[in-house]
Length: 392
Ligand SMILES: Nc1ncnc2c1ncn2[C@@H]1O[C@H](COP(=O)(O)OP(=O)(O)OP(=O)(O)O)[C@@H](O)[C@H]1O
Image (tube, rainbow, N blue to C red; front, side, top):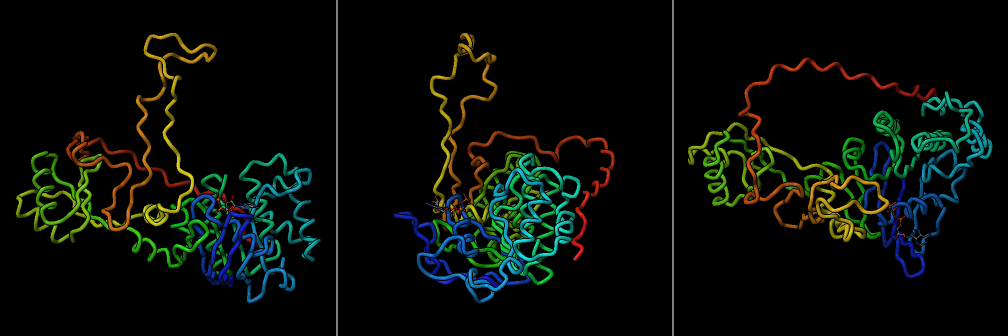
């Protein structure tokens, strides 16, 4: 188990982590989430004794990392996959780490197999792709067969097969009773991998709870309502629902996204308004939506739209000198102003890509299209070539 109590780290006038207290328990995958610069890597470095807390403490198995007997055999970590001597081969790099930690050399080939790098084990790591480097970093973390594992952005640069593999590896390690603490910005992946979440913003704890509770507590469920493609019916139903206190947003495909009313009530109101329903289904928001809503106020770095001032040429004008570009801008104009996600506490959830009802241009309702010829059956998904199982 990892335990932080009042953990604080300042760099000069910058407070990277402030008064963080949490526990990371064995037997589950704990996701560590937070916007860029929120203090995740700093926290992980303090767990591993690479940074000294300004205040508070963090222990692994009850002791500070630096006081842990045989620490490399008990804690494995992937912090920075690029922190490798590029002139060494993958096998040589792992052999060096193994020798430093008193780990038998045969273990190197085991972990090379686990991460799927056997074929390139003799190649210098400076020629490795980002994903291969990540795999090598994961191999290093597994080397000592540790009971506690920390992974900082382990799927960074991995291809879909690699992401799938990491997900299963994390879950397997946790199912063996290990403590698995993993940071990631990939919410869809975290939703599939993690059991528990610790979320920080600007160095402070925002949430410490199960994934299920996090989504339920930080998002609003909604009903998807689909009517026949008759604008008058849709408007009638929208009015009836709004009058009853619901918030109604129209989706691109004409469906209505309704919050604030239970499904039976929506059904009754549709019946009273004499509007037929083709769909009435409950939906749970995604982890990404819940995360956006929770961390909206703690984001330090937000993008603005690119105004490209002085770069746009009127149609027919000569191309800008020296660019050798076609005169027509290759993107639709004008570029819309990018808005930060607009979730606010207590506000109806506003999906950033959904236009408000008034701005709606009728889309094609797939339910009104003539039946398309049956598509050929999709071939079964090819089985990814899994790296060989850990031979321990
Ligand atoms: N050695 C350092 N010296 C000064 N400031 C630092 C140092 N390390 C981190 N910081 C600052 O502390 C804050 C937290 O950084 P940290 O790398 O821990 O964030 P993070 O959550 O891991 O970010 P990201 O998601 O972008 O990796 C940032 O503002 C960063 O600039």
